[in-house]
View (cartoon, rainbow, N blue to C red):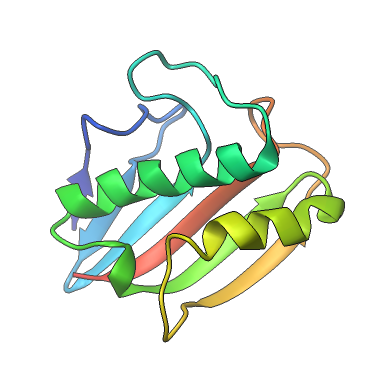
Length: 124
């Protein structure tokens, strides 16, 4: 198992890797809309937060030798299910058919003050 640490994605905020690769699969830890250059959340709308989150995931996947095109499973966590449609709209700009399997759940809180967190599994 190899840890992935992409310079173009935010540092982890706890004792976990941005991602790990095992065999031909990369497991990306939950990511949010943190600007990797500043370490701050500088986008407000849920659409912008979703886009930044997926850009961060894309950077991690690229470091692992793959891309968003190879995502097979995604888990989406939102703090307000009323944002579901807006998250889907932004999410659709970053994935293509056949779409990854996915779940989306509302959570009461996330580790930092954000509206969305996404984790993915992709093939290398």
